Image (cartoon, rainbow, N blue to C red; front, side, top):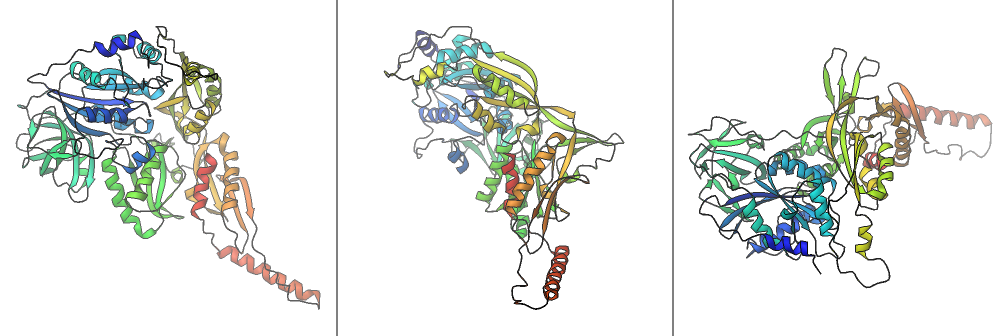
Length: 639
């Protein structure tokens, strides 16, 4: 690969860092858009610093969960302590998907700096801008990095120009590397030591430790991941969790190297874990401040703004007797994932379960799969929805995440739905199709910005000698990008939006969204009735303009899913008392007159009347048992 003069100059310009006698701790995170190489870069850093010596070599070394390895994404933030040239580097690897942005914000609160990774092929994406804004808002030092420069289609100088233009990053501060081959990673470590401010190491003040993540061990209880901001803590010390007010004796503390390594103490500036035999998950909440019982800090740290769930659905055990097991599993998962919320709920159709809140559809899918894998609890999930607000006649505002709680339309109420600021980054030639997609989902256009680099592209990769266009030439067609901003109802992003966006832009577009506010909207509750009995698990809240079409699609899928009975089955969709769609499932018919070979016609009429009366009586007392496929069909039609 030939490198341009500008790339070589930047790579070699970083001087060698000199170790300091004090202030030798650097705490930093790696942030990026999904699939831009965060976990691979973390693997190379662990290799160069010798953290993987004596351990089995695996890809995604910091991704512990089986789901993370299968899907190739980071779900949980991971922390590891490294030593390099006499310095202590505390690395926190973060997720890149928009659903796990809360994990990123928590990790950044424990750091003084962040490495912003950008793909040399794809360039700046929507989540890149979101993470950059999040890091700068917390006052962190940013080290911009252009990754994957070893790829034939890479265009690092053009991507660097994007960084310089959109993020206001000086050109000489941008590093170029390949996390796959290790090229430039040593220069990155030097930059981390020189640019990121050292952590404060004042141990004379009372202990203040921030819990930024946690997990649960069935034998040892809560394992709290902490950043020590001041003071120190040792085994046998009695600590107080300031938010919950509970006190425990420290049994063990230490760091991740990347495996758990006990240590005699944790000092100010360090990142590690504390085990104190905590069995109640609520006693060590994420964002709480830990201090010493005999010398407590006067005030706690600011902690975190609580995560606000955006997507809700019902989760019920397929076996009703496993309700308590499901509750225990939820409690342990909520300790490991503070953005996950759940409340008990009783459904006449599905029995006892929970109404759960998630940050997005991927978050919901991950939680459901973890429950089924890690706790062996088969689940039935209802259709996901968002939370709405309803202003009652007395002026009181209530939040409605369950369609059962949606008020009657005959009352003088005002319904509101959540709106989000949607940011789409796409090649310029796909701007029209993106606008068409968003506007078909009630999006309101706000702004559009074209990415015009300040510097010309001077990077010339080696092209393969072939008559057909190379990957590099194809990539250059998409060098000019645009960023679209829309205000859109959050519910419109739930079903199929990501798939349609990728399909319409050949996979090149990306998006990010953030909650704005609740706005008045013409919302209705769509109810599904089977033989006049409402099925609450199939109810949904949606905009009136979508009600009729959605109701017809639901009924078509239910008709194909519900098995035939010995009596007539009517399925209907209604808004209040108004039926807007209906389907009928014909009953099985037994030929009761087959045995008659002649005689008076009244004998046939008598048998048919008797059959008719029996079917009418059976229809009154017969119950239709809905299979799980009926609930899954709701998700299918939404897609």
